[in-house]
Image (cartoon, one colour):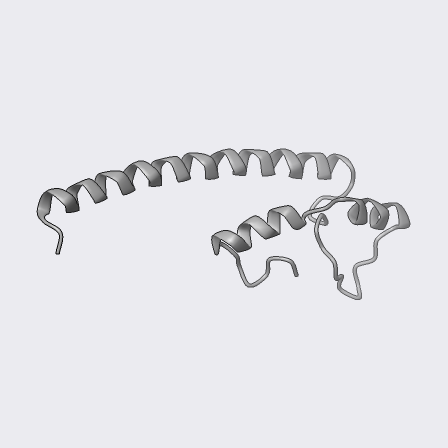
Length: 91
């Protein structure tokens, strides 16, 4: 059983780690905003990473080639490793 001092140290250490994690998440969000802006400029707004399309949503050949050229698997892999995924990720 841990004593109160050890418990406080664990809480303090966790708070530091949580702060570091939150800072990195903010950095990642900023990078993803840049990715989204680049995609929008290329006419791929909201289309990067989709492997399956609705029947009513057709891509031009140029759009399909651009989507195929963008490798989002490293991002999905890291999200999966962290356990941070949604039911729609990769759909």
